[in-house]
Image (cartoon, rainbow, N blue to C red; front, side, top):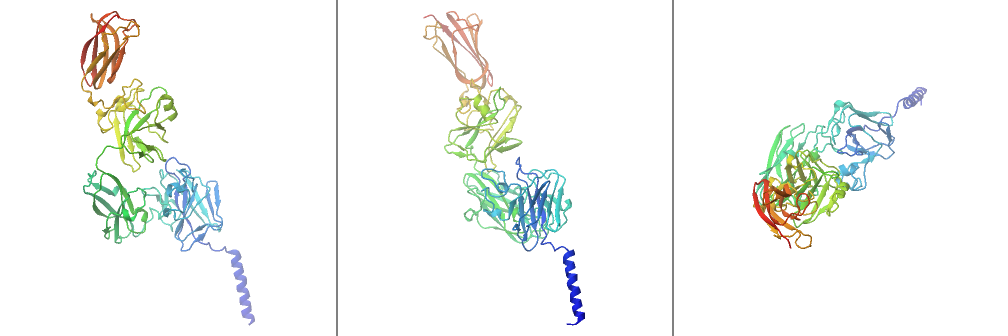
Length: 573
């Protein structure tokens, strides 16, 4: 080897060493912040999460990388892998023991308490120190060479709505981010809803319809579907599949398929294509799914619509409610199972025209001919009605029943309105409930409701005082015994006055002597339908009246204006 070659090799080696010392090693890959949920859905406080995305074609080990949120810092241990072209969720609370809903896995997985045991849990997720503000904040992700990805937001995306990165290769600035436009509010483990895709057909629940809307049993109806090309190129040919989720488990199985799929032709960008399928079902409620074949965004390829076939009275009806409680009373609503079949009210909802809230997420069976009380305050209800002997539930959230009029809306786990009613300001009678007359008539019939005529003002957990009062369309008045002798000897010391009056009438009962002088007022404009009241032979001052003939005067007001007179004899034995 010549001296010239040797000197060249020495100089090359020294230069290489210098470069190794001066220049940092190349980053092992580029991972970006891809989606952030700062405003958790509902009132939960541990459902915040951040999504990372690896756009590279090989997996990256995040060992030694750092995640920063406010004062919280997480350094990932070696072996924290994010697969190629895949996602990693950083969750404030990843899993929880069922039925605790405070976890990422409960809301975006199957709620089993284990991450990775369900097809929708196919991407990695870990728990980190994390606390995000809804309206503003910053999160930062730094690799071992101090290269960072950072995102700062300055407004609230909305309840349960995430911030999404538009382009994975674009810059970190807010101009490359937007609010999630997917109906569920976020897209963890999936292509972002705001990220353009070449081949992207979509369906939304709003683009499904039934004609006619309330089909009769075994009659044919049409399920109409509008498929939209939301991609950036003309779509590819595809197929639309139809299913009925008979067991309501959200898993579409082969035996739930509704015949052959329909063909979807090429659709231009931002254009729609309408497909309809003719179907028929027996009486009942059903959840019908439509599903597009595979494309670049599969999560917007499926939607469902709930239908009710055949009009029937609901199994569970609203039976009584108190919207204007008296002192030391809570608001409450009574439900009644009018059928011979138990009904599980798990995941059912109750509320008013502004919204409905969950009754319970646990099994809650209402058995045949049984009552159930839902109240804003269970302990106060039990102290107010110690004789109540049915199940009493205090839901997690209560919609106030406005005294001046409101709606009560009762929905099943599918979101169907099972029963609903509106009431007016005349229901505002302190401590007096509104009762259903008949569970076999619809709630929308205003003549099926009136204020309780029970002496206690309501009948929780027992048959309503108005039950089947429709038949009372005439006035009846009986006195027994007559004559009677209020002399204190224990025999016929008082007389019973039984009556029937027309429904929604108020009753006045007064006693006069033969000269027309008022002796006793037994009732004065009291809401009644039928019943009995006792006269003990005393006047309004508490004195026993003289022996003789007295006039009983009955008068009704309200829905009827009737009057009737009869005589009562007070005798001496």
